[in-house]
Length: 77
Image 1 (cartoon, rainbow, N blue to C red):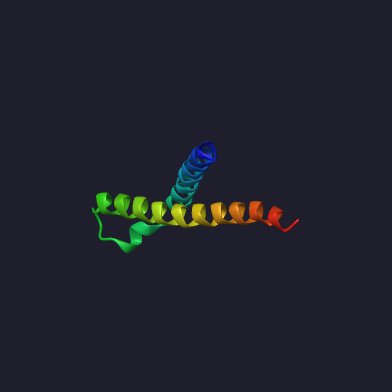
Image 2: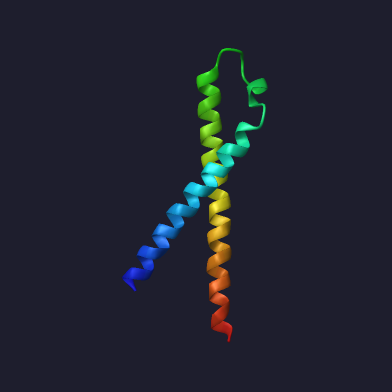
């Protein structure tokens, strides 16, 4: 039982890190510098980081919930 919890934690962490990295990569393609004043590069970078973390977390939650629910389907049969 404890081993399952540990494996689930590792899978969750890896999923979150991968989805945050993908969302950061996708956010870099957007031109968010037009939303900020000129010369505010630090604020733009922090904004990209926070939005990427939030988006990656949401996508990771969706993927993990989808996997958990898919694994729970075997209880039907």
